Amino acid sequence: MVSVTAATLVAFAAGAIGAPQALIDRRQAPGGCNSTVELDASTNVWQNYKLHANSFYRSEVEAAAAEMSGDAAEAALRVADIGTFLWADTIANIARIEPALQGVPCDEIFGLVVYDLPGRDCAAKASNGELKVGEIDRYKTEFIDVIADIIKAYPNQAFALVIEPDSLPNLVTNIDLQSCQDSAAGYREGVAYALKTLNLPNVVTYIDAGHGGWLGWDENLTPGAQELADVYIAAGSPSQVRGIATNVAGWNQWDMVPGEFADDPDAQYNQAQNEKLFLELFSPELEAAGMPGHAIVDTGRSGNPGGRLEWGDWCNVVDAGFGRRPSADTGSEWADAFVWVKPGGESDGTSDSSADRYDEFCGKPDAFQPSPEAGQWHQAYFEMLIENANPAI
Ligand code: BGC
Image (tube, rainbow, N blue to C red; front, side, top):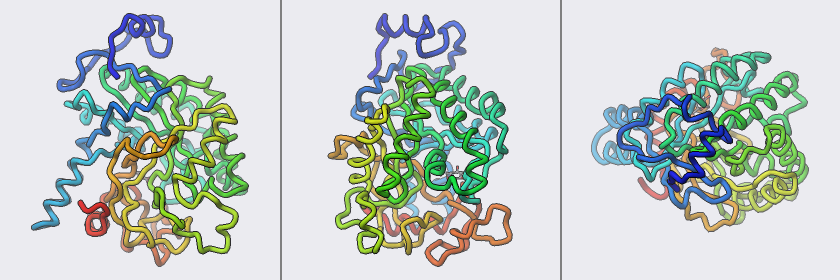
């Protein structure tokens, strides 16, 4: 997993997949590895690395625990030790990355979500971003390039990236919306730029692929795989891309049979009734389209199924619980690891119907109310996730 072979140094020096070594301002944190990390994305790196429990989420969770008492407070503090991704969701929030890179143990991989495309969240309102359609140059120079510089400054640190949740899946299923048509070119160009620019030796990358209730429909499987593979190929088939991330911020079960929505009349048109089945259908389609099909699956909030009225409901689902812990022991040839991508306790969207980013999904009867803006801490929801956790916290 970690090596300082001559080949690594030559690859660096030649700028084969990274910037020339001399240009790298090394800011290696104390506590990390003492040699450069080179990840082989043709293998499952999660066999060698544990997902890091980052200090940003830890501080959110510790503040939450301070509001609680007794056993619940103790359980809350245990959540801080569970590996969770950090979200770079605005240019300003890139500043959260470096402090969180201090003191990461050598056998841990830092999970980072890259989430700031122009015209973000084109089919919903809750996570509309800061960059407007057309601001692709700002996305490249003020967002992706800055993140790339940080990753280059920590060559001894392993990173796992999730690239732009919901973006390409929206182009497959929501392209009838004017907003998604307007966003499409920027999404494709932006994701390709991110894949290419972040193709660094100490990185393994997963492109967001929605979930079984989204691209798992019979008629979405092939076009979905084609959309992702086209962008991957446009980026030059980067060596560090391992495949896809599924169920990010989602609610689906990993291997529940029959599936949670198997009784729906529409279930006959979707064989991807759980995420394991989704991978068995979608990953081969990706490989046929020319892209690797390995996956990480967000299981963070999948502990207590049954809260959703409809499969597509996504906003602060009631009765949810923390789910399976991060682990490389998935029992699936396609799934590298279960991971926690959505930080449990951060909101999916506001329930305040007068807010600019109010989305009607956050006012549905199965959406927890009241809820704050997307990304904001949601204390009551966090406490519910602990209560309903399976396995228990
Ligand atoms: C929000 C982001 C936030 C992320 C993780 C998304 O829904 O739009 O701002 O960082 O969730 O909580």
